[in-house]
Image 1 (cartoon, rainbow, N blue to C red):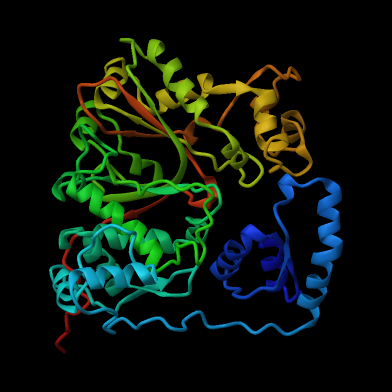
Image 2 (cartoon, helix red, strand yellow; image 1 turned 30 degrees about the horizontal axis):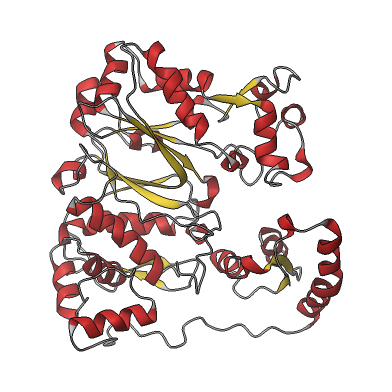
Length: 465
């Protein structure tokens, strides 16, 4: 699709060839870049599971005719707004059960019980922070729908959020609208899901849990704000199987991860948001999309040198096909997340280690054999054009020289291009020696951060002249 988008932007007609399972995702990608309704030629099945003979026959017998039609025939493009209620329409009425079933039938709910978003509830939710309900923050790139304070609040009421959470939700919406985040990829086939990470005063002021049970549902702020994100993606961004969620296997909605700001202050470490230009006092929401995750349990050792190899092993273990974001689908965009419990972070700090020291050590230890790296981005996944070796990629400047220090296929190579690519957060039970690792999805929901403004809005304040 991106080749077609570049061609169309230059005034050159195009047709994108896609497998049948990618049609809606292709449409969302085009829409997200301002080209809704680009012509497609659809191949049956999936080319990764076909012989060359079958694939070529499908191209000849199916795709060629669609390519010709796409280049020579006018295509009617709909406006994408048919049969959708407007903001103040009464979309459902009746008993709680009737409203629940109406929302289920229309795909407006995640299937869990919800609080009906009545006009009064939504008005009251917004009134606390005095935002203009009809302020438009932007247009959802994957659906073309308006992103407004009102639409944010409707889904917040449904999720059970508190009005005090609205500034966090607005920050999340602004990240979703940030082109560098790439929200139009939220439904990509490998099913990565977004994680919201709160740093700064909001971490404690708004009731987020940053201690025991971090990343588990059951704490109101973490759970409801995390649920809001999935509902908002569904109802505003089209994150449904009928529109552009094409995940082969999905994950449950991720609850919010809040950093332990007291622990960070005690050991003198900066919060995660500092990696994105914010200082320690900043009230910040950071987001990225992640694939697989794993617990690193019962970490044993009293010095950094004893502990780092186990943490690095965990990071290496959860890094698979997504290494194509080192080179392939992305370029130097693979940034896995390590969440340290406070006791582990304190052990590093007591030894005089900064976060950068931890990253340097992880860079040296979180490595896999070169042959495995090459298979993960090439032979096993077919995601790197030409299936070039790491030495070939290094010689052409596509990956750093550290990936080609020899031609030995068993040499150990890093899983990231630079130590700074390791993201580190501190949260969890302060008395347990556990850590958690998450493998991120590169440009399919790239790292992004936005300040949280909890001051009362001036949207509706009238000036007197």
